[in-house]
Length: 219
Image (cartoon, rainbow, N blue to C red):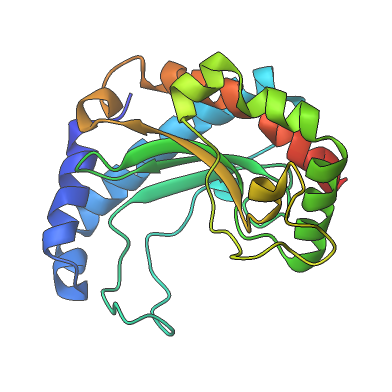
């Protein structure tokens, strides 16, 4: 379980997002980082039991840095106000679809998964897989438990049909997507409960058929 002090640190960071404050509270940051990484290890262990493609992952393969790259951003605050980890074959920089957990106070924590803004060759493969096997894709995303937990598949979309597809294609709403992702929110209170790891793993298990569908296209 995550410690309340980890959420407290992130809340304070949101109000004091500057290097001077961060350096003065480096000890609290290191404690929050260690706490989050401990949870990530538990998630890796659990995922390895329910998804063979997750075996062999290490914490460093999954956790994102808290330091922002502000070179091309209008927001010049130097730190993220969340802690995040991505779980996918080959680590967080691979082209495969994967699972994701983000801890962010204020009710902004969530477990999600899918594939976010893949490069053109991978996106082309995914669209082809959806087009060729739309009935299977539709069965996955229309499962009652899937809808109850995630609602619908999300992602930025093209305004018109992508090249090679007709506007009246039955799968056109999904073929227009530039990302295919799902997510499930968690309250701040839920994040510090003993059952949190179990609940995240349950969420990951529900999205596993979608990830398998996407990664079949990537292969």
